[in-house]
Length: 132
Image (tube, rainbow, N blue to C red; front, side, top):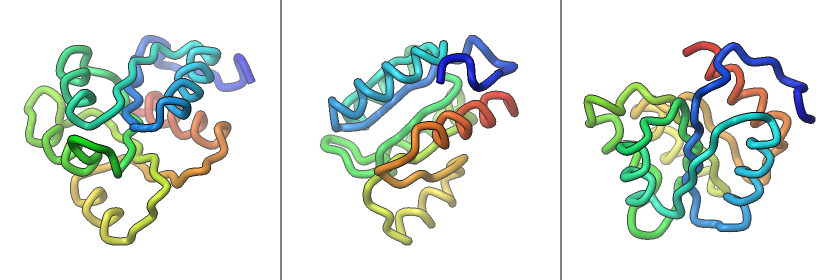
């Protein structure tokens, strides 16, 4: 899959926030194969700290996590003047209509349910970064 997607924005960092270490590692590895810079966090609090430090070009965010949910992290991102415009793609196994509605009202860019097709995720990431 290396080199399959051509991107305009080649320097953006993607922050992956999910409480499943194996999934985070897999996503990180596959994104790095596709020449993305990737940072990771295993919960919403850690993700918010990382976002403040690195100001990523895109965040992949799980909904249900310990310490701080993805929705709470998203809410705090949108309240932060410096971080509020960062595109967020929600990645979650729980496809609750209420969560989708809340995330939509907080301005998510897209929503993908687990398990997901990596090529589809990669295409969405590339589209979002190219639109920035």
